[in-house]
Amino acid sequence: MVYQIKWSRSIGEIIASLLVSCFLLSLVYFYISASSGALNAHERSAGLNVQTSSTRGDGHFISENIGRENMRNKNPKTTPVLSCDLTDFRSEVCEIYSNVRIHGSSSSILFTSEKTVSLEANKTWRVRPYTRKFDAFAMEKIRAVTIRPLVASTEAPKCDLYHNITAVVFSSGRYVGNFFHDFSDVLLPLFITARQFEGEVQILISDMQLWWIEKHRRVFNQLSNYEIIDFNKENRVHCYPRAIVGLYSHAELTIDPSRTPNNYSMVDFSRLMRRAYSLERDFAINLVERSKRKPRLLIIARNHTRKIINVGAVVDVGEELGFEVVVSESSFRTSVGEFARMVNSFDVMMGVHGAGLTNQVFLPTNAVLIQIVPFGNLEALSELDFGKAAANMMLKYLQYSISEEESTLIDIYPRDHVVFRDPMSIHKQGWAKMGKIYLRQQSVKLNVTRFKPFLRRALELLT
Ligand SMILES: *[C@@H]1O[C@H](CO)[C@@H](O)[C@H](O)[C@H]1NC(C)=O
Ligand SMILES: *[C@@H]1O[C@H](CO)[C@@H](O)[C@H](O)[C@H]1NC(C)=O
Ligand SMILES: *[C@@H]1O[C@H](CO)[C@@H](O)[C@H](O)[C@H]1NC(C)=O
Ligand SMILES: *[C@@H]1O[C@H](CO)[C@@H](O)[C@H](O)[C@H]1NC(C)=O
Ligand SMILES: *[C@@H]1O[C@H](CO)[C@@H](O)[C@H](O)[C@H]1NC(C)=O
Image (cartoon, rainbow, N blue to C red; front, side, top):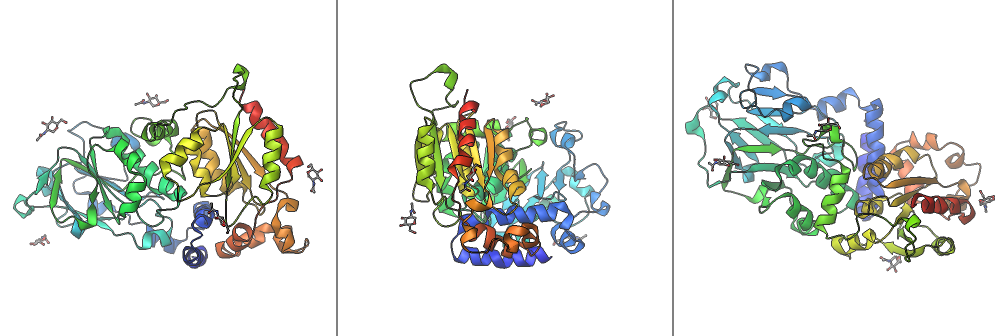
């Protein structure tokens, strides 16, 4: 609980100051605290709407907390009419396989089946369809969708529209606009959940914001051949043979192929990105092949916190090693497509931990990502966020931890301060304190002598 309370307050501050990218680490921080066992009993009962055995009806038609094999089982004799997994750490998902009737404006989903007679009468299931279930602040404003089997078919509302495809219902939720969360919370989970239908799926979004849909329109167009429905505003009853409520999610910014319907992986996701944005390069430069072109290095600059204050010196070293170097801020002013095409033209991308590194999804295969980790014991968090994704996309990944001398914190705190002596004790004071010092007060001044071997290593990795 301690983490939760402090964390919420700090998020408020951050949103107020529009330092959106700052909170990236906070969430992972919370995630780590929670997943490493800090999830106490109260959080468990508040967060997990676990269905108990009494809801299972006769055991044939409702399956809850199903394993992967059940999910893949397409045998009509054994397919349940409703199958929910409400115990996962990241998300709640229900799949309905029979006569689904969706009334968006009342957030209700009904279904009928000859088998529903065996369901517990009037039992409803509640799903909060956003993938940060472990994060109380994120979930607070997510509208729950209720799912209810209809006992008598006469009770069923009339279908205003019938679609012979699958419906996927989810919330675009809390953190949209932060590039990391756009991908980690929504686009990747949507890919995991909907890619299997090869476009024959209708997307219904709760808490929808049109500007955000437009921002990622090309990705949605890759996943669905149909128009997107603004769930909360839709007053007509839409009917489908099948629906998935909620999105599957495996980890921050990545996919576990063994848990996707067709073994889809981050490699498949980056292929989809290339198609969506017509990215030209599938592979990074191979220096063995002696192309005339120089290898290209992109430095993702941050403008507010965690800046590289001597970026000019880094550019010089890069050029000295034979790179063509470009410094760019991933800016809200640029369209995603424009920035994606630019990123795709590089062979190495480097930057200090932050949402801008999400742009790695546009890099060509075999390209190198160098993540600069600020001072303060942030290595594990940084790797969890971006390192895993890079490896899973078949990028090469290097992580550079700055030394005390490279941190601007030495201009603020004396060298014998606890900030330097014992970062873990700051972490233990909760995220607000940790984030204030190590994320918001800190910028980096790279020691180019110390950093240069990493750029050299990146060159080696391009052969
Ligand atoms: C279920 O709900 C309907 C309508 O709300 C009601 O008429 C019916 O009596 C309820 N059934 C049970 C068993 O509670
Ligand atoms: C729905 O589509 C399936 C094939 O995807 C087809 O077999 C079935 O007949 C269709 N049903 C209706 C009612 O159109
Ligand atoms: C998924 O991968 C596993 C292991 O690599 C393989 O045995 C299985 O056949 C694959 N399944 C599909 C549907 O490609
Ligand atoms: C970065 O910040 C400076 C001053 O804070 C501002 O002048 C500049 O326009 C910003 N750059 C971008 C790309 O937003
Ligand atoms: C920069 O790094 C080099 C190599 O690790 C080291 O010898 C040197 O002392 C560092 N310079 C500063 C100013 O810390």
